[in-house]
Image 1 (cartoon, rainbow, N blue to C red):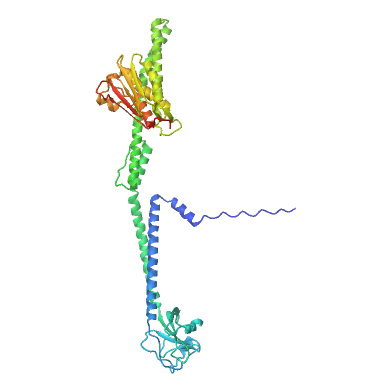
Image 2 (tube, rainbow, N blue to C red):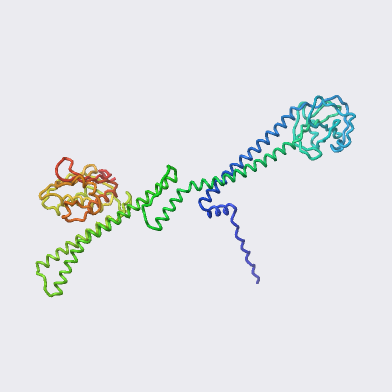
Length: 493
């Protein structure tokens, strides 16, 4: 049983010319591509202009010849008979001049006559026009009408011919008047050579100009590349490049400078955060280490500490652990990048309910204080946990700085949350630092805290699309006033 072999696989198709050109362009540098494309664009423009110029000149030259032929005087005469020959070559070779017609007026062109008997030449003719089998169709033209066609002489020279039916002879005759077009073709050929040379020179100049333009235009890009490579090599963010003008390259340079400056600021903030965090962590860790060392030493020496001292040490250690827990939680909160206004953790939350829960916790931390509240319903789009922590931090800040038995005023009207205490207030020269991380007023550094509470407030409010300010009380009295503005509405939708 025979088997039919499978057909051979078709050879892979070679990539098309267009794909090869695209691949070649992609393999070139940006400067090379810009030079090639600019030269190609100029070459196409020059070629189109040269072709248009050539065709316009050709049309005008041949149009002038047609006009001259159409205005040439017709051949006339009273000759009753014509001596004709079968072909124009025979007529030219055997001119006899006895019965040729007379041509009225001076006709500075070659003239011959065509009849059913053949071709007739006037006396003294030196050229004969090649006739076609259908030239006798011109006899059907009305008197005064003519037709013009391209032709040639018997010596091969090109010509333009006018055919006119004449009834001045004993037999129907087609009068053929020709003018040579070889000078026109020579002129057009010279024009083509001239235009080709000009086009080639223009293309070469365009290539040189494109190279110069590419070098000048891409100089800012080279500077940008050098700056990026310098940053990648040395990791020195903050490097900028000069910006000139307001074009696309200038915008790119400006964007790069902004990005580099933002990276430098981010690294600076990161370095400062690490340094500040290390400084803040050192104090509770040192205290914990001291207390642990004291407990271990008392256990190793066999001299137990008095119960009261040991209880105090353990209480201090617990307080330090709590402080570390709070500090680490604050650092984790601040380490998160600012979220956009929409995200998986952002929902519609009731700000008045958040303020109520935070107020209950603040009352437990300041049992001797008086809280005056006034809240209207207000719904915002944000992170419920982050907003609640922000409100708690504001209330904790007010509780911390309120005098014993003082009053804290909390209000929420039309999306504006205010927390006002009656403490010592904030000096004007310190207002610009209150939302900085780890910043603490020199007058309050003996109080507990890490200086991160207000930074968390600012971040949480920004994530919800709002703004927060902290300053002196508006009525001129003692204390500080914190104001939080959040977009939203009195209804959930």
